[in-house]
Length: 359
Image (cartoon, rainbow, N blue to C red; front, side, top):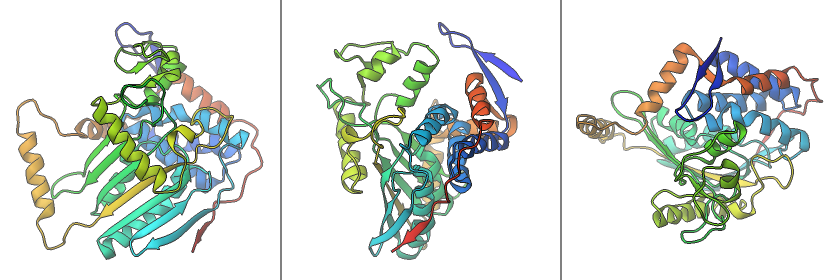
């Protein structure tokens, strides 16, 4: 049933409530109609809906139209042959072959999680990849397996080095997750821009302004126009410290994996131009089985929660997920309409399933 919501000063936006299972089916149908193999479509739909369910709408339904356009133009390789090889006793290289990131991340975690449990650590470098969505979804999988999970990813250029006006770094997110003795894992996911660039793209698609403080235009002036913001630069968190972190991620995600730097990467949004070829690096750490790690983490988190006016990172995310599981997702109606249109489109010739070659 359509619903309406509005923020003060912004236009009313119609939304539609859809169950999580129906959302996955709808995205899956839209992707397979465009020629994406069923198993790849399943991986992508799972990740997009998981992001939508935790409130990261810039990584959810809003990406579907761009994904399909890039599949149709050939910018995303639906025939990608994912390869996996060891670079050392606890180091893996996964080549996404310019296909969707999510199947390559599935391969990385399927190999890396048992390796970390055996050796104590696994480093998974994903190369020649695409938009990887909400990093929280991936690190939580490691924490659910009893491991500490860390992930970094670079993205097409969006942030200028501090003091400059020309974008060079991506928003380059960082995520962390850890299990604890009591309750769900602690999950932290942050973009190195003040807000995720997907939020600016969402505002642009919805013809809505953005708040001051999110971005600068090409002249280095603050702007509320999302189009000017996309042409300009996102503002980093922590000013110069934020761009220093972005540089660190650039090295870990791009140089370490052999992928494109942010200023070389093709757009996540345009159907034209070169493939993004960005990278992601994941690290899984096994806590010492004989230590009291889980109990100590829980003790620390309980101490933080006991403070007046303090909320743990990720607490709101968990609440949003629980609400979505019970009530369904509230998605912008135009995005649902587009998804249904894509799902009902004449199916294109299906590609073969992605094969993983292990060497």
